[in-house]
Length: 268
Image 1 (cartoon, rainbow, N blue to C red):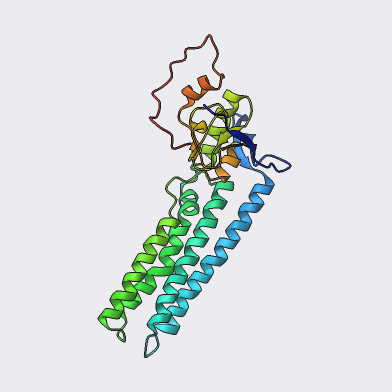
Image 2 (image 1 turned 45 degrees about the vertical axis):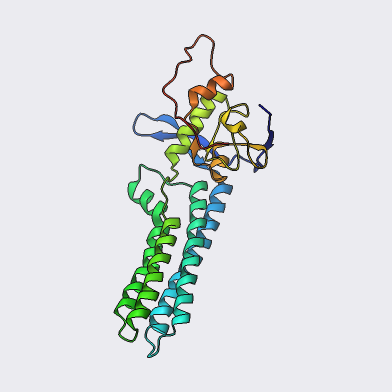
């Protein structure tokens, strides 16, 4: 198997995420919990502010479409359709920025309300930006049935597309980052993982078979768990037992039989 070039992801003065001792309960027992660095949190805040601006523009477009276009005696269909498309683009762009921010600074699953709102806010904003407009289009007395079908149908389609991009199907969490970082550090000895641009998961070493599959740029990227997530990777590989052996981290006196492995990780 040809060895790919390993590329170190550029690091900040401190790691993008770290596990710190956190006191819980009366036991005063410290348990390691992942927390974002100040730099990562600052970057996430900037991304969220940018997303908020785009979403506000989308809602402003909706307000103009309702009060400036639909309230006119002669509805300008070209302008209305253009506004629907622009609102959709703004909603999608905001959602993508918000998702990137959530990779840098995820919520806790132990706080279910905040976790849901933070991860599905893009979908919620999309509904707010489209549903009232679609309803008022269908109820408008100055539009013909054909115009209502065209504008309303387009609105529904764009809302569904934007809602798809706004919905987080596999949201990151502090608990996930903590568990992955602790697992990697226990096996590897440090917070260091490997991935490729095309893959969805990250791996324990550059010698792992999955990370050495053919890829377009022929490179393997090296960095922390948090940097892997920031690069768009969903999770740590489930082939822990297999990669522990492939990377030479298993101990000779320990059994090598592990739990059943996932048939494939979508990694190359």
